[in-house]
Image (cartoon, rainbow, N blue to C red; front, side, top):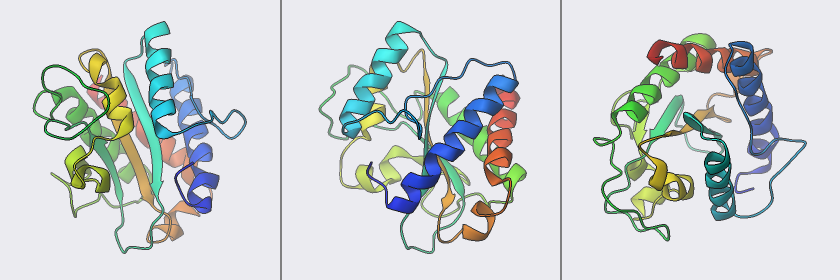
Length: 200
């Protein structure tokens, strides 16, 4: 519920397409929020619910789907990987939750961003990233202010069992021509499947 109206309107469409594509490829894919069943509450509530779901039925990968909705000139697809050491959080965890300690997360981030780029024509994000298409949690606006992303904070306790990524499918202004083209959501979804398949 934190995005602007245009972002809120299209994110469930992309998420549903990704779910369908994963299921068609033989994966089990469940969704926490969609246009027909919107889980209410804050990002903290969503983070707690994601952990509850994982505890009840352990998952291998968590994809938190977003679009950039700001008016900046930034463009491109990228995945944000957990990198929370030194950031403040209300969900304390022991040990480290850095990109260096989560190499599989970074590997999936790279593969999925490349897969979506190839399938849709979205360029890989190249500014404010650790490498094309992959951003550290610390490079986000929230991380830059010294805080953890809620979803990463709440799932830090299962970081050795669960790959955790935030996937940004382009900027709704800068990438509008690609995002608004017919079939974009299905192409993006196939790119996600392709990326996951490369790592598997």
